[in-house]
Length: 582
Ligand SMILES: *[C@@H]1O[C@H](CO)[C@@H](O)[C@H](O)[C@H]1NC(C)=O
Ligand SMILES: *[C@@H]1O[C@H](CO)[C@@H](O)[C@H](O)[C@H]1NC(C)=O
Ligand SMILES: *[C@@H]1O[C@H](CO)[C@@H](O)[C@H](O)[C@H]1NC(C)=O
Ligand SMILES: *[C@@H]1O[C@H](CO)[C@@H](O)[C@H](O)[C@H]1NC(C)=O
Ligand SMILES: *[C@@H]1O[C@H](CO)[C@@H](O)[C@H](O)[C@H]1NC(C)=O
Ligand SMILES: *[C@@H]1O[C@H](CO)[C@@H](O)[C@H](O)[C@H]1NC(C)=O
Image (tube, rainbow, N blue to C red; front, side, top):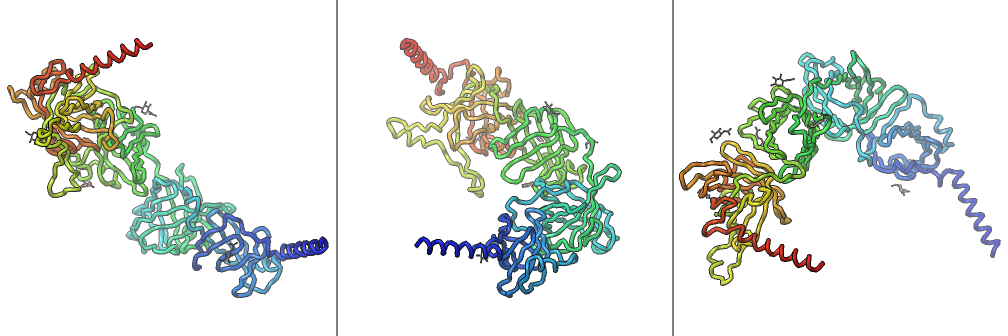
């Protein structure tokens, strides 16, 4: 029994040894080669641990030499594979032949044998940073002469693995045309003194991977103190015949565009807070790099905005800035307005232009019609509210968003019908039905308290800054305790409805007249200018003044002191009870 087992074991060992000697069990490609690869002229190539689709099964390996059996053709070949980059394999191979030793077969590869390139599809680590970082101007030659006038241009994208090449057509050079190509850099490596780049070029004429994958040879130089690159591009999806940066299907000479030495900075009142947010917090504006760079982030790609020229006047600054968003770049005009401590506003041109001097032309920057973006700091500080006093609230309702009811602007009453309330013995008081408001009637003057019909429910807002513009007032406020569905910040927009008494309108808080009315609308994204207070906007209502903070409210109005005093006594009693317990 023991002997039989021993014999079986020895047999198994012998078989496995023969296998190893024969190379049939031990041939493995590096694990990280596994995956799908592109090769010019060949359908998709898949590589697994021991098999290359279109070539066959690996039988034996020695360094970068592999003996591969093509079972369908019943023949063998030597393939020498060099990994140039995690995303690039290059190889040379013999014809498929009779079985020979690995070394004998591999010695048949001559120096001038064709070099094949395989490029990884969907590289796991993604693309790589491009070796040249724009902006550049460049001239190019597609074989019929150098196109240098007008000069072409390369811009970097926000993503450093992408470049945008804007080719110009030269009238005197045949075959040149004005096109835009986007280059995604996939791999770079160096061989001797030659530097290679593999990239994918996207343009409207490129419809397949065969059109898009290109090989580049490049060289970096300094010329008259300026950074330059010479670049040769392959005519097909291989690196064949690409030997120097001055010979190729297309050659280019890149010259770095030096940043203008202008010391353009965003002004202090804009940068003293590094970060600004829109009221609904959907976008943030972040200043960095010595206050010369602004990054605007929202759901799409980040926008990088570099100050180019700033003209400051009273409480406002007009800036020409170079912006990059994805691969779109150009100049925009922006105007920042200083509003109140932690509030600024911004107008920005819609589209980019390629000439800085044109960005602020009224054609591209129609400041009378461009919308305003209201920006606030991340942490808000309480400020004194405007229009201190006590008011009755009338007509409070919420406008249904216009996109839902485009044709008829519908009002959704959040006030329950009065008739319904009257029929009940105990009125069902809707806490959202605010009937009165007291503004700044606290010690710190920085809160607005809304009272509902039962005089108890209070919705409080904290004031964070206000300003007036041509008869319309704007106030930034936030709910003191927020319902999960409500907005976090509001812009209250006011106009004066006149005074029923002597007709004089005085904005000064101290002389604020009784019976003066205010029309109010709220907005949640920005302090929109196309809103008519009391008519359109998110929530609308009218306010009629009934007294100063210090005065007791007159008939028909709810007195805040009447509401607050009992609670104050209640707190005092609790405090007294607690101290007695101690
Ligand atoms: C590799 O792929 C070949 C062909 O698809 C298949 O026959 C073989 O079993 C695979 N080997 C491994 C180790 O997955
Ligand atoms: C950026 O602006 C802030 C606020 O105005 C200032 O304190 C800071 O020194 C500025 N930084 C640079 C590098 O200019
Ligand atoms: C900035 O713009 C103003 C107004 O267009 C112009 O007068 C000024 O020369 C510009 N400054 C620079 C440095 O370009
Ligand atoms: C700016 O964009 C808005 C909306 O996208 C459009 O309604 C408006 O006409 C544009 N204005 C200009 C000057 O292009
Ligand atoms: C506010 O008053 C104005 C003018 O009296 C009126 O047109 C408007 O409809 C009122 N708004 C509300 C919400 O009641
Ligand atoms: C102020 O309002 C008047 C009348 O509506 C208007 O003609 C004028 O252009 C406005 N001014 C500003 C600076 O908005």
